[in-house]
Length: 154
Image 1 (cartoon, one colour):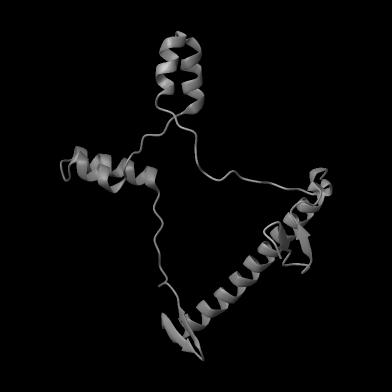
Image 2: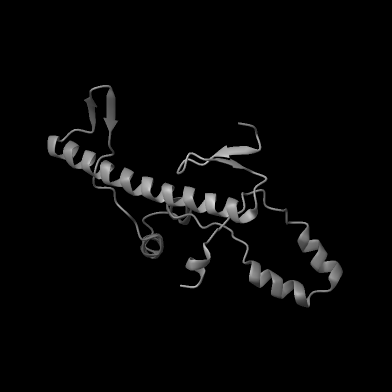
């Protein structure tokens, strides 16, 4: 197998990366379906292992050659907006400082791109260009979505 070929896990067939785009899309869709099926199966098995370990009240367990570990139950989820509001009251009452509250529920700066675009549209071009100095092209991976034509028409 060369660097321009790939074995499609679902079919075991050798796929040339020079193949027509529709064949690459079909391979992509097959792999995506397999990923979803594997994720579902993994979740079912993980739930069963968790149930068994909870029954024995253990977080680590050895089964043959396998070592299994599960997180403790009882994780608490927090409503950040409500907590921020309550902490504001606690700060106002003098129990904690505003800095302490900020460390609990930090507020982050995030660029509102739509608002920035509106502002840039009304600024003189030389001023708008100054704002562009704060931008860089994102290096993140680009999302690829492949849908079969039957999925698109639904």
